[in-house]
Amino acid sequence: MTSFWTRANRRLQTIRQWYERTPERALDQAYDAALMIRAIEDEHFDGNRISNSAGRYSENTFAYFQAELNKYLKIAEIRLSEFKASRSFLNITDPSASARPEANQASDREQPAIVLEKLKFIDAIIERYKSQPPNSLSLVPVSQVNGRSPLSSSNLFTAAERKKSPYSPDLISEDDSILDKTGVLPRSILGTLNRIKRDLDPNSEPQVVQSFRATKAKTLISIRFLLLLIIVPLLTQQLTKVFVISPIVDRIRQPDQAQIFLNYELEETALQELRIYEERLRFDSLIGRAPRLTEAQARECQVELAIREENAGVNPPIDWEGSIGRADAPVSLSAQQVRECLVKERADELAQENFQNGSNAIANIFADGFSLIAFAIVMLTNQREVGVLKAFLNETVYGLSDSAKAFIIILFTDIFVGFHSPHGWEVLLEGVARHFGLPANRDFIFLFIATFPVILDTIFKYWIFRYLNRISPSAVATYRNMNE
Image 1 (tube, rainbow, N blue to C red):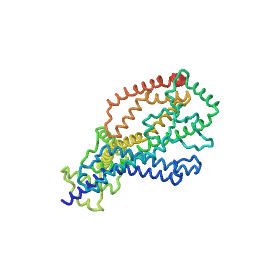
Image 2 (image 1 turned 90 degrees about the vertical axis):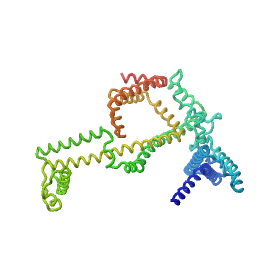
Image 3 (image 1 turned 180 degrees about the vertical axis):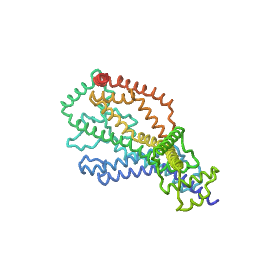
Image 4 (image 1 turned 45 degrees about the vertical axis):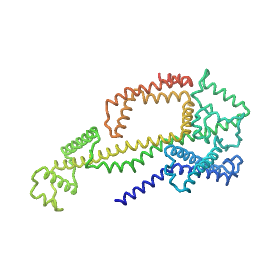
Protein backbone atom coordinates (compact mmCIF):
# COMPACT_ATOMS: atom_id res chain seq x y z
CA MET A 1 0.00 0.00 0.00
CA THR A 2 2.85 2.36 0.85
CA SER A 3 4.56 1.65 -2.47
CA PHE A 4 1.31 2.43 -4.30
CA TRP A 5 0.97 5.83 -2.63
CA THR A 6 4.65 6.49 -3.29
CA ARG A 7 4.21 5.77 -6.98
CA ALA A 8 1.04 7.85 -7.12
CA ASN A 9 2.75 10.76 -5.39
CA ARG A 10 5.71 10.51 -7.77
CA ARG A 11 3.34 10.47 -10.72
CA LEU A 12 1.48 13.53 -9.43
CA GLN A 13 4.76 15.35 -8.91
CA THR A 14 5.76 14.57 -12.50
CA ILE A 15 2.45 15.87 -13.82
CA ARG A 16 2.76 19.00 -11.67
CA GLN A 17 6.27 19.69 -12.94
CA TRP A 18 5.13 19.21 -16.53
CA TYR A 19 2.26 21.63 -15.97
CA GLU A 20 4.46 24.26 -14.33
CA ARG A 21 6.90 24.09 -17.24
CA THR A 22 4.18 24.91 -19.79
CA PRO A 23 5.31 28.56 -20.28
CA GLU A 24 8.92 27.52 -20.74
CA ARG A 25 7.96 24.71 -23.11
CA ALA A 26 5.68 26.97 -25.20
CA LEU A 27 8.36 29.67 -25.42
CA ASP A 28 10.96 27.12 -26.52
CA GLN A 29 8.68 25.84 -29.27
CA ALA A 30 8.02 29.37 -30.51
CA TYR A 31 11.75 30.08 -30.38
CA ASP A 32 12.51 26.91 -32.36
CA ALA A 33 9.98 27.97 -35.02
CA ALA A 34 11.67 31.38 -35.27
CA LEU A 35 15.05 29.67 -35.56
CA MET A 36 13.74 27.55 -38.44
CA ILE A 37 12.62 30.72 -40.26
CA ARG A 38 16.03 32.30 -39.68
CA ALA A 39 17.72 29.13 -40.97
CA ILE A 40 15.70 29.26 -44.21
CA GLU A 41 16.58 32.94 -44.62
CA ASP A 42 20.30 32.37 -44.06
CA GLU A 43 20.55 29.27 -46.23
CA HIS A 44 18.40 30.21 -49.21
CA PHE A 45 17.83 34.00 -49.14
CA ASP A 46 21.21 35.34 -47.94
CA GLY A 47 19.78 36.38 -44.58
CA ASN A 48 17.02 38.48 -46.13
CA ARG A 49 13.30 38.10 -45.80
CA ILE A 50 11.73 35.13 -47.58
CA SER A 51 10.63 36.69 -50.84
CA ASN A 52 10.92 35.90 -54.51
CA SER A 53 11.28 39.49 -55.65
CA ALA A 54 14.66 38.70 -57.24
CA GLY A 55 13.23 35.72 -59.12
CA ARG A 56 15.86 33.30 -57.86
CA TYR A 57 13.50 30.33 -57.51
CA SER A 58 10.76 28.82 -59.62
CA GLU A 59 7.11 29.10 -58.71
CA ASN A 60 6.88 25.64 -57.14
CA THR A 61 10.11 26.04 -55.19
CA PHE A 62 9.08 29.36 -53.73
CA ALA A 63 5.64 27.99 -52.94
CA TYR A 64 7.38 25.39 -50.75
CA PHE A 65 9.33 28.10 -48.90
CA GLN A 66 6.14 30.14 -48.49
CA ALA A 67 4.30 27.16 -47.03
CA GLU A 68 7.13 26.51 -44.56
CA LEU A 69 7.15 30.17 -43.59
CA ASN A 70 3.40 30.21 -42.93
CA LYS A 71 3.65 27.00 -40.92
CA TYR A 72 6.41 28.28 -38.63
CA LEU A 73 4.77 31.69 -38.25
CA LYS A 74 1.56 29.98 -37.20
CA ILE A 75 3.43 27.79 -34.70
CA ALA A 76 5.21 30.82 -33.25
CA GLU A 77 1.96 32.74 -32.92
CA ILE A 78 0.09 29.87 -31.24
CA ARG A 79 2.93 29.07 -28.85
CA LEU A 80 3.31 32.73 -27.90
CA SER A 81 -0.40 32.82 -27.07
CA GLU A 82 0.03 29.66 -25.01
CA PHE A 83 3.03 31.25 -23.26
CA LYS A 84 1.05 34.36 -22.32
CA ALA A 85 -2.03 32.42 -21.20
CA SER A 86 -0.09 29.93 -19.10
CA ARG A 87 1.91 32.67 -17.38
CA SER A 88 -1.33 34.36 -16.38
CA PHE A 89 -2.54 31.18 -14.63
CA LEU A 90 0.67 29.94 -13.09
CA ASN A 91 2.63 31.44 -10.23
CA ILE A 92 6.18 31.43 -11.51
CA THR A 93 7.67 32.60 -8.22
CA ASP A 94 8.85 29.67 -6.10
CA PRO A 95 8.49 30.39 -2.37
CA SER A 96 11.18 27.84 -1.58
CA ALA A 97 13.84 29.60 -3.66
CA SER A 98 15.68 30.80 -0.57
CA ALA A 99 16.35 27.22 0.44
CA ARG A 100 18.00 26.32 -2.85
CA PRO A 101 21.67 26.12 -3.43
CA GLU A 102 23.50 29.19 -4.65
CA ALA A 103 23.96 27.76 -8.15
CA ASN A 104 20.23 27.23 -8.59
CA GLN A 105 19.46 30.75 -7.36
CA ALA A 106 21.91 32.17 -9.88
CA SER A 107 20.22 30.14 -12.59
CA ASP A 108 16.84 31.55 -11.55
CA ARG A 109 18.22 35.07 -11.77
CA GLU A 110 19.44 34.39 -15.31
CA GLN A 111 16.10 32.93 -16.43
CA PRO A 112 14.27 36.29 -17.05
CA ALA A 113 17.16 37.47 -19.22
CA ILE A 114 16.96 34.31 -21.32
CA VAL A 115 13.20 34.67 -21.70
CA LEU A 116 13.58 38.29 -22.80
CA GLU A 117 16.23 37.40 -25.34
CA LYS A 118 14.02 34.69 -26.83
CA LEU A 119 11.01 37.00 -26.96
CA LYS A 120 13.05 39.72 -28.68
CA PHE A 121 14.30 37.23 -31.26
CA ILE A 122 10.79 35.87 -31.94
CA ASP A 123 9.32 39.38 -32.22
CA ALA A 124 12.10 40.40 -34.60
CA ILE A 125 11.39 37.44 -36.87
CA ILE A 126 7.62 37.99 -36.88
CA GLU A 127 8.07 41.74 -37.39
CA ARG A 128 9.82 41.07 -40.70
CA TYR A 129 6.62 39.52 -42.09
CA LYS A 130 4.04 41.97 -40.82
CA SER A 131 1.91 43.43 -43.61
CA GLN A 132 3.68 41.17 -46.08
CA PRO A 133 2.47 42.00 -49.63
CA PRO A 134 1.25 39.17 -51.84
CA ASN A 135 3.86 37.80 -54.17
CA SER A 136 3.29 38.57 -57.83
CA LEU A 137 3.18 35.62 -60.16
CA SER A 138 2.03 37.62 -63.22
CA LEU A 139 4.07 39.04 -66.07
CA VAL A 140 2.95 42.56 -65.24
CA PRO A 141 4.96 44.10 -62.37
CA VAL A 142 2.60 45.11 -59.61
CA SER A 143 3.74 48.08 -57.60
CA GLN A 144 2.21 50.60 -55.36
CA VAL A 145 0.16 53.15 -57.22
CA ASN A 146 0.25 56.74 -55.97
CA GLY A 147 2.16 55.59 -52.90
CA ARG A 148 -0.64 53.32 -51.75
CA SER A 149 -1.41 49.66 -52.26
CA PRO A 150 -4.87 48.91 -53.70
CA LEU A 151 -5.36 46.27 -51.03
CA SER A 152 -4.24 48.33 -48.07
CA SER A 153 -7.51 50.19 -47.64
CA SER A 154 -9.67 47.29 -46.60
CA ASN A 155 -12.39 48.17 -44.17
CA LEU A 156 -13.40 44.56 -43.57
CA PHE A 157 -10.98 43.70 -40.80
CA THR A 158 -10.88 45.56 -37.56
CA ALA A 159 -7.68 46.61 -35.87
CA ALA A 160 -7.93 43.68 -33.47
CA GLU A 161 -8.24 41.22 -36.35
CA ARG A 162 -5.23 42.71 -38.13
CA LYS A 163 -3.29 42.43 -34.91
CA LYS A 164 -4.15 38.74 -34.62
CA SER A 165 -2.77 37.98 -38.08
CA PRO A 166 -0.28 40.75 -38.86
CA TYR A 167 1.61 38.92 -41.59
CA SER A 168 -1.51 38.01 -43.62
CA PRO A 169 -2.50 40.45 -46.38
CA ASP A 170 -5.95 41.92 -46.54
CA LEU A 171 -7.89 40.44 -49.41
CA ILE A 172 -10.83 42.82 -49.46
CA SER A 173 -10.71 46.22 -51.10
CA GLU A 174 -12.96 49.22 -50.65
CA ASP A 175 -15.24 48.09 -53.45
CA ASP A 176 -16.05 44.89 -51.57
CA SER A 177 -17.82 46.69 -48.74
CA ILE A 178 -21.12 46.43 -50.53
CA LEU A 179 -23.39 47.07 -47.58
CA ASP A 180 -21.79 50.45 -46.91
CA LYS A 181 -21.87 51.63 -50.54
CA THR A 182 -25.29 53.23 -50.51
CA GLY A 183 -25.90 56.71 -51.75
CA VAL A 184 -28.09 58.89 -53.91
CA LEU A 185 -27.30 57.08 -57.16
CA PRO A 186 -27.85 53.34 -57.57
CA ARG A 187 -24.85 51.13 -57.09
CA SER A 188 -24.93 49.87 -60.69
CA ILE A 189 -24.51 53.42 -62.04
CA LEU A 190 -21.67 54.12 -59.63
CA GLY A 191 -20.03 50.84 -60.60
CA THR A 192 -20.25 51.74 -64.30
CA LEU A 193 -18.71 55.17 -63.71
CA ASN A 194 -15.91 53.68 -61.63
CA ARG A 195 -15.21 51.08 -64.31
CA ILE A 196 -14.98 53.77 -67.02
CA LYS A 197 -12.70 55.83 -64.81
CA ARG A 198 -10.49 52.82 -64.18
CA ASP A 199 -10.32 51.97 -67.88
CA LEU A 200 -9.18 55.50 -68.74
CA ASP A 201 -6.55 55.58 -66.02
CA PRO A 202 -3.08 54.85 -67.51
CA ASN A 203 -1.95 53.31 -64.22
CA SER A 204 -4.95 51.00 -63.87
CA GLU A 205 -3.27 47.85 -65.24
CA PRO A 206 -1.41 47.00 -62.00
CA GLN A 207 -4.59 47.62 -60.05
CA VAL A 208 -6.57 45.26 -62.30
CA VAL A 209 -3.95 42.53 -61.93
CA GLN A 210 -3.84 43.05 -58.17
CA SER A 211 -7.64 43.02 -57.94
CA PHE A 212 -7.82 39.79 -59.95
CA ARG A 213 -5.21 38.18 -57.69
CA ALA A 214 -7.11 39.29 -54.58
CA THR A 215 -10.41 37.95 -55.94
CA LYS A 216 -8.84 34.61 -56.79
CA ALA A 217 -7.23 34.29 -53.36
CA LYS A 218 -10.50 35.32 -51.67
CA THR A 219 -12.44 32.66 -53.57
CA LEU A 220 -9.95 29.90 -52.72
CA ILE A 221 -9.85 30.88 -49.06
CA SER A 222 -13.66 31.02 -48.83
CA ILE A 223 -14.20 27.62 -50.46
CA ARG A 224 -11.48 26.02 -48.36
CA PHE A 225 -12.89 27.53 -45.18
CA LEU A 226 -16.44 26.43 -46.04
CA LEU A 227 -15.22 22.86 -46.53
CA LEU A 228 -13.35 23.13 -43.24
CA LEU A 229 -16.50 24.28 -41.44
CA ILE A 230 -18.39 21.27 -42.80
CA ILE A 231 -15.77 18.51 -42.60
CA VAL A 232 -14.22 19.23 -39.20
CA PRO A 233 -17.49 19.12 -37.16
CA LEU A 234 -18.72 16.03 -39.03
CA LEU A 235 -15.45 14.17 -38.53
CA THR A 236 -15.35 15.21 -34.89
CA GLN A 237 -18.91 13.99 -34.35
CA GLN A 238 -18.33 10.62 -36.01
CA LEU A 239 -14.90 9.90 -34.53
CA THR A 240 -15.86 10.84 -30.98
CA LYS A 241 -19.09 8.89 -31.23
CA VAL A 242 -17.56 5.71 -32.66
CA PHE A 243 -14.27 5.55 -30.77
CA VAL A 244 -14.90 7.40 -27.49
CA ILE A 245 -18.53 7.89 -26.48
CA SER A 246 -20.26 4.74 -27.80
CA PRO A 247 -17.86 2.32 -26.03
CA ILE A 248 -18.39 4.20 -22.76
CA VAL A 249 -22.18 4.20 -23.17
CA ASP A 250 -22.22 0.49 -24.04
CA ARG A 251 -20.11 -0.29 -20.98
CA ILE A 252 -22.29 1.72 -18.61
CA ARG A 253 -25.69 0.94 -20.14
CA GLN A 254 -26.14 -2.82 -19.90
CA PRO A 255 -29.20 -4.49 -21.51
CA ASP A 256 -30.21 -6.35 -18.36
CA GLN A 257 -30.05 -3.22 -16.17
CA ALA A 258 -31.09 -0.25 -18.29
CA GLN A 259 -34.48 0.52 -19.73
CA ILE A 260 -35.13 -0.66 -23.25
CA PHE A 261 -37.14 2.42 -24.30
CA LEU A 262 -35.95 5.96 -23.62
CA ASN A 263 -39.44 7.46 -23.94
CA TYR A 264 -43.04 6.41 -24.27
CA GLU A 265 -43.20 7.18 -28.00
CA LEU A 266 -40.56 4.60 -28.79
CA GLU A 267 -42.43 2.08 -26.68
CA GLU A 268 -45.73 2.81 -28.41
CA THR A 269 -44.07 2.53 -31.83
CA ALA A 270 -42.53 -0.84 -30.95
CA LEU A 271 -45.81 -2.20 -29.54
CA GLN A 272 -47.70 -1.03 -32.59
CA GLU A 273 -45.19 -2.68 -34.89
CA LEU A 274 -45.35 -5.92 -32.89
CA ARG A 275 -49.16 -5.84 -32.96
CA ILE A 276 -49.20 -5.39 -36.73
CA TYR A 277 -46.69 -8.23 -37.14
CA GLU A 278 -48.82 -10.55 -35.01
CA GLU A 279 -51.99 -9.69 -36.92
CA ARG A 280 -50.20 -10.29 -40.22
CA LEU A 281 -49.13 -13.75 -39.06
CA ARG A 282 -52.70 -14.55 -38.02
CA PHE A 283 -54.03 -13.33 -41.36
CA ASP A 284 -51.53 -15.48 -43.29
CA SER A 285 -52.50 -18.47 -41.17
CA LEU A 286 -56.21 -17.96 -41.88
CA ILE A 287 -55.72 -17.84 -45.65
CA GLY A 288 -53.53 -20.94 -45.66
CA ARG A 289 -50.17 -19.22 -45.96
CA ALA A 290 -48.90 -20.00 -42.49
CA PRO A 291 -45.14 -19.58 -42.07
CA ARG A 292 -43.04 -22.70 -41.84
CA LEU A 293 -40.14 -23.22 -39.49
CA THR A 294 -36.98 -25.15 -40.15
CA GLU A 295 -36.13 -28.17 -38.03
CA ALA A 296 -33.68 -26.19 -35.92
CA GLN A 297 -36.10 -23.31 -35.41
CA ALA A 298 -38.92 -25.71 -34.50
CA ARG A 299 -36.73 -27.54 -31.95
CA GLU A 300 -35.61 -24.23 -30.41
CA CYS A 301 -39.21 -23.08 -30.29
CA GLN A 302 -40.24 -26.31 -28.56
CA VAL A 303 -37.58 -25.78 -25.90
CA GLU A 304 -38.69 -22.19 -25.27
CA LEU A 305 -42.32 -23.21 -24.97
CA ALA A 306 -41.47 -25.99 -22.55
CA ILE A 307 -39.42 -23.68 -20.39
CA ARG A 308 -42.18 -21.07 -20.45
CA GLU A 309 -44.77 -23.64 -19.36
CA GLU A 310 -42.52 -24.86 -16.60
CA ASN A 311 -41.99 -21.32 -15.31
CA ALA A 312 -45.71 -20.71 -15.46
CA GLY A 313 -46.40 -23.83 -13.34
CA VAL A 314 -48.02 -25.82 -16.13
CA ASN A 315 -47.26 -29.56 -16.09
CA PRO A 316 -45.36 -30.37 -19.31
CA PRO A 317 -46.00 -33.53 -21.30
CA ILE A 318 -44.61 -36.70 -19.78
CA ASP A 319 -41.96 -37.29 -22.43
CA TRP A 320 -40.93 -33.65 -23.17
CA GLU A 321 -37.72 -33.91 -21.17
CA GLY A 322 -36.60 -37.02 -22.98
CA SER A 323 -37.74 -35.95 -26.41
CA ILE A 324 -35.97 -32.62 -26.24
CA GLY A 325 -32.66 -34.24 -25.56
CA ARG A 326 -32.91 -36.61 -28.55
CA ALA A 327 -31.88 -35.19 -31.91
CA ASP A 328 -34.10 -37.65 -33.79
CA ALA A 329 -37.21 -36.90 -31.75
CA PRO A 330 -40.10 -35.66 -33.89
CA VAL A 331 -41.09 -32.00 -33.47
CA SER A 332 -44.79 -31.29 -33.61
CA LEU A 333 -46.00 -27.69 -33.12
CA SER A 334 -49.43 -26.23 -33.64
CA ALA A 335 -50.07 -23.10 -35.67
CA GLN A 336 -50.66 -21.14 -32.46
CA GLN A 337 -47.30 -22.25 -31.07
CA VAL A 338 -45.52 -21.32 -34.30
CA ARG A 339 -47.05 -17.86 -34.18
CA GLU A 340 -46.01 -17.44 -30.54
CA CYS A 341 -42.44 -18.38 -31.40
CA LEU A 342 -42.30 -15.94 -34.32
CA VAL A 343 -43.83 -13.16 -32.25
CA LYS A 344 -41.32 -13.86 -29.46
CA GLU A 345 -38.47 -13.68 -31.96
CA ARG A 346 -39.76 -10.41 -33.39
CA ALA A 347 -40.19 -8.96 -29.88
CA ASP A 348 -36.56 -9.79 -29.11
CA GLU A 349 -35.47 -8.07 -32.32
CA LEU A 350 -37.50 -4.96 -31.52
CA ALA A 351 -36.13 -4.85 -27.97
CA GLN A 352 -32.54 -5.11 -29.21
CA GLU A 353 -33.15 -2.53 -31.93
CA ASN A 354 -34.75 0.00 -29.58
CA PHE A 355 -32.08 -0.54 -26.95
CA GLN A 356 -29.40 0.17 -29.55
CA ASN A 357 -31.29 3.24 -30.76
CA GLY A 358 -31.39 4.51 -27.20
CA SER A 359 -27.65 4.06 -26.81
CA ASN A 360 -27.08 5.87 -30.12
CA ALA A 361 -29.30 8.76 -28.98
CA ILE A 362 -27.32 9.17 -25.75
CA ALA A 363 -24.06 9.04 -27.69
CA ASN A 364 -25.41 11.62 -30.17
CA ILE A 365 -25.91 14.17 -27.39
CA PHE A 366 -22.25 14.13 -26.34
CA ALA A 367 -20.90 13.69 -29.87
CA ASP A 368 -22.86 16.71 -31.10
CA GLY A 369 -21.51 18.68 -28.16
CA PHE A 370 -17.95 17.89 -29.24
CA SER A 371 -18.93 18.80 -32.79
CA LEU A 372 -20.14 22.23 -31.67
CA ILE A 373 -16.92 22.75 -29.73
CA ALA A 374 -14.89 21.88 -32.83
CA PHE A 375 -16.98 24.30 -34.91
CA ALA A 376 -16.43 27.07 -32.36
CA ILE A 377 -12.69 26.41 -32.28
CA VAL A 378 -12.50 26.61 -36.07
CA MET A 379 -14.41 29.90 -36.05
CA LEU A 380 -12.32 31.44 -33.27
CA THR A 381 -8.95 30.38 -34.65
CA ASN A 382 -9.70 31.57 -38.20
CA GLN A 383 -10.94 35.12 -37.75
CA ARG A 384 -9.31 36.28 -40.95
CA GLU A 385 -10.98 33.52 -42.97
CA VAL A 386 -14.34 34.42 -41.39
CA GLY A 387 -13.97 37.99 -42.62
CA VAL A 388 -12.96 36.84 -46.09
CA LEU A 389 -15.94 34.46 -46.20
CA LYS A 390 -18.34 37.26 -45.22
CA ALA A 391 -17.02 39.47 -48.00
CA PHE A 392 -17.17 36.59 -50.49
CA LEU A 393 -20.80 35.83 -49.62
CA ASN A 394 -21.77 39.49 -49.81
CA GLU A 395 -20.11 39.85 -53.18
CA THR A 396 -21.70 36.63 -54.46
CA VAL A 397 -25.22 37.45 -53.27
CA TYR A 398 -25.26 41.10 -54.29
CA GLY A 399 -23.45 40.35 -57.55
CA LEU A 400 -26.30 38.21 -58.89
CA SER A 401 -28.70 39.49 -61.48
CA ASP A 402 -32.04 40.95 -60.42
CA SER A 403 -34.01 37.92 -61.58
CA ALA A 404 -31.62 35.55 -59.81
CA LYS A 405 -31.94 37.52 -56.57
CA ALA A 406 -35.72 37.48 -56.79
CA PHE A 407 -35.75 33.75 -57.58
CA ILE A 408 -33.54 32.90 -54.57
CA ILE A 409 -35.58 35.08 -52.23
CA ILE A 410 -38.87 33.51 -53.35
CA LEU A 411 -37.38 30.02 -53.08
CA PHE A 412 -36.13 30.52 -49.52
CA THR A 413 -39.23 32.31 -48.30
CA ASP A 414 -41.55 29.66 -49.73
CA ILE A 415 -39.51 26.85 -48.18
CA PHE A 416 -39.10 28.32 -44.71
CA VAL A 417 -42.05 30.68 -44.25
CA GLY A 418 -44.44 29.68 -47.03
CA PHE A 419 -47.79 27.91 -47.00
CA HIS A 420 -46.30 24.40 -46.88
CA SER A 421 -43.43 25.23 -44.52
CA PRO A 422 -45.19 24.00 -41.30
CA HIS A 423 -45.05 20.42 -42.57
CA GLY A 424 -41.33 20.74 -43.22
CA TRP A 425 -40.67 22.26 -39.81
CA GLU A 426 -42.68 19.47 -38.19
CA VAL A 427 -40.66 16.77 -39.93
CA LEU A 428 -37.42 18.56 -39.06
CA LEU A 429 -38.26 18.94 -35.35
CA GLU A 430 -39.41 15.33 -35.08
CA GLY A 431 -36.16 14.21 -36.69
CA VAL A 432 -34.14 16.27 -34.21
CA ALA A 433 -36.11 14.81 -31.30
CA ARG A 434 -35.58 11.30 -32.63
CA HIS A 435 -31.86 12.01 -33.07
CA PHE A 436 -31.51 12.85 -29.37
CA GLY A 437 -33.95 10.20 -28.14
CA LEU A 438 -36.51 12.73 -26.91
CA PRO A 439 -40.29 12.47 -27.22
CA ALA A 440 -41.74 14.74 -29.88
CA ASN A 441 -43.71 17.25 -27.82
CA ARG A 442 -46.61 18.25 -30.04
CA ASP A 443 -47.37 21.39 -28.05
CA PHE A 444 -43.79 22.65 -28.45
CA ILE A 445 -43.78 21.80 -32.17
CA PHE A 446 -47.03 23.67 -32.80
CA LEU A 447 -45.84 26.65 -30.75
CA PHE A 448 -42.55 26.70 -32.67
CA ILE A 449 -44.35 26.55 -36.02
CA ALA A 450 -46.66 29.36 -34.94
CA THR A 451 -43.83 31.74 -33.94
CA PHE A 452 -40.50 30.99 -35.62
CA PRO A 453 -41.58 31.21 -39.29
CA VAL A 454 -43.27 34.53 -38.48
CA ILE A 455 -40.04 35.86 -36.97
CA LEU A 456 -38.08 34.56 -39.95
CA ASP A 457 -40.49 36.20 -42.37
CA THR A 458 -40.09 39.49 -40.53
CA ILE A 459 -36.31 39.22 -40.81
CA PHE A 460 -36.57 38.58 -44.55
CA LYS A 461 -38.82 41.58 -45.04
CA TYR A 462 -36.57 43.81 -42.93
CA TRP A 463 -33.52 42.74 -44.93
CA ILE A 464 -35.32 43.49 -48.19
CA PHE A 465 -36.45 46.89 -46.93
CA ARG A 466 -33.25 47.89 -45.13
CA TYR A 467 -30.51 46.66 -47.45
CA LEU A 468 -31.73 45.23 -50.73
CA ASN A 469 -34.12 48.10 -51.40
CA ARG A 470 -31.25 50.60 -51.16
CA ILE A 471 -28.57 48.54 -52.87
CA SER A 472 -30.62 47.04 -55.70
CA PRO A 473 -34.09 48.60 -56.10
CA SER A 474 -34.58 46.84 -59.45
CA ALA A 475 -34.17 43.45 -57.72
CA VAL A 476 -36.93 44.39 -55.26
CA ALA A 477 -39.21 45.41 -58.10
CA THR A 478 -38.51 42.12 -59.90
CA TYR A 479 -39.20 40.22 -56.70
CA ARG A 480 -42.56 41.92 -56.24
CA ASN A 481 -43.57 41.27 -59.84
CA MET A 482 -42.60 37.58 -59.60
CA ASN A 483 -44.32 37.17 -56.24
CA GLU A 484 -47.65 38.61 -57.40
